[in-house]
Image (cartoon, rainbow, N blue to C red; front, side):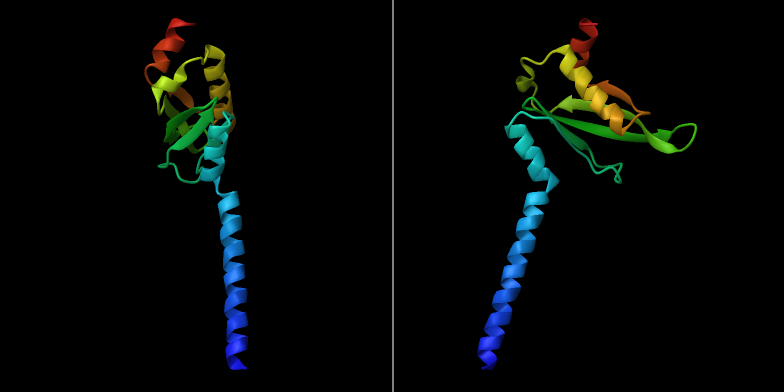
Length: 130
């Protein structure tokens, strides 16, 4: 009798554990980033409360990484500078100036006081196509 109740309790605990793990997997932002990257969609992944963590952006199948720098504005301490680069520059083929402007506009929505700086070769591309 006691063994049956213990077995049912363990089975119930296992089912709850698996449900919680499945929900965490589905809601994981890193997984959403990878899915968007595979489908060549836009996705912005950032831990806004941790300034030291870099953010990741996927756009048209290209993965970008960015560094945030904290500084002062007239009102508060905020992100004032962002450096962004492509993780694999070989995948930049086909991207146009408008694509980088779109990425900058999305970043400005999240960090309106930030100055966005691109690293090479994107910086040279944008400079030459002004």
